[in-house]
Length: 136
Image (cartoon, rainbow, N blue to C red; front, side):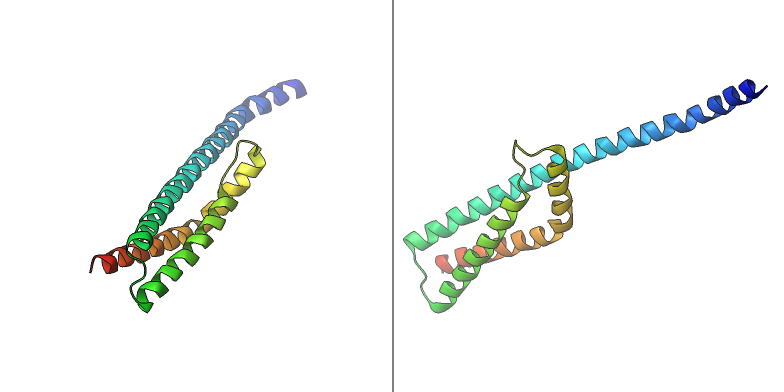
């Protein structure tokens, strides 16, 4: 009799076990997607920063800061770019990173994504301002 109750209990638990296994595997898939998304975000920010730095170098080489305001804006741009470079290096995943390190960096990125987006917007605005000032 006890064996029959054990078997019934085991059969009743199987759907719950399957449910938890599926939830766990879905969570792993979500983490994998987050890691890919984080890597893409970092690559986009690096490209965006590189393009802005090239533009600023061109402006500086061919036009130079024409006045104090332009010089100040250029200084702000370079300071912000240095901060972003440091943050990107801290967040960037390398081939040698294990799963735990990748997960940790992904979590850092998720926490810093809003800040990074704002910093990149500031860089774009400063770059655009410098570009406009050089044309005038």
